[in-house]
Image (tube, rainbow, N blue to C red; front, side, top):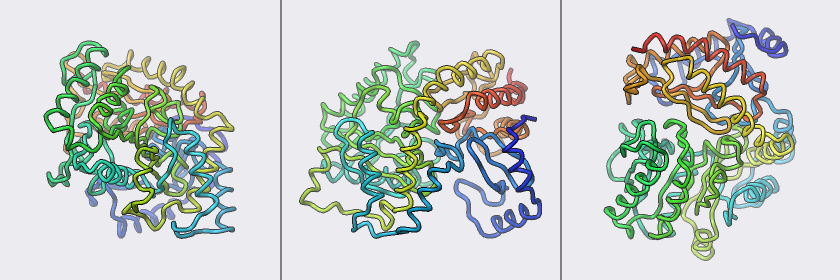
Length: 462
């Protein structure tokens, strides 16, 4: 069992109340309808509290949060500066219609623009990532007068009507009506290359050639935008090869296609830069964000808009809006989050942690465990690709696995939780996506627990 810091153990013991846990669980199971779940087959853990990189339940157990909850808690649980900012704003003005101007909204927009690349000078605020992508696509279609959107197969962009069709992974299938104007393409992924490439350079060029062929065959004049996660998130933490994003930008420019960077997961420090596109010096026409902008303390998302797109709506109304666009409490949390991240050097720390601790540590685990086929990542965004056989690269659980077939990864997660560590699991992968301010000691604690838990996956290898 992993030994957590004394203040975490004390907080967990103070919250210990098995009866309270059962009351919360009963209310949840009786009345809450959970996303992405067969309702009779889930048993959500009642959470009592959290601080920094840890959270705890009502039965006195604490967990190192290597999932950042839903890959959004970039500054960790309970940051005092953000809590104080929300409290101050609540006393001053809890809510205001989006048709008014407000100090927290304007300040948050200015700070986000200052961090953004190039001429992304306007912000349309939403309540989360799916809404951000939904509106970015609407803006692109209105700006170009074209209907189609290109999106990668290995992608997740949200679960609204438009964004679930943008999504490339199997979560799209039950909701895909085939009429959303979305065309999917293969992005680069050397480990499971659809292009039979043997090097990153080959994979990059062949992926760009494939994308260009897709554009030509679909008709460039019909394509409004291409949406892409600069680093693929729940689709596998796939870091693009050098030159790929620049090549995508060139193809978009050549054919008058707008480039949308979906930075809902990668923005605000996750990859060791404020925005993932900064790692490759690429500027999109639209950039979507949510999650890390205020670590989910109050729901917030948005679209960063380039001058090229924004000017179109100078005299023509934009036909879209949200009641809670730029909510004062959410924007106050965003301002405090960005200030804290800058003051405490969290983005730089995330880059250092990935380069010197998480990356090397996870690769050492791969050397010891035959179930780890590949380690991928950047900053505080990493994935372990679990396989049954390194030679054949057969997945530990199959693509689009039925619940029963996912049992091997479920058992690995159970082994992690038993050791007081909670990473993120999806498909045949374990994702290590902790807060940006995870300490070196906490990172090594998590690595040690993963080392033990991976023996469960090893038992399934050939």
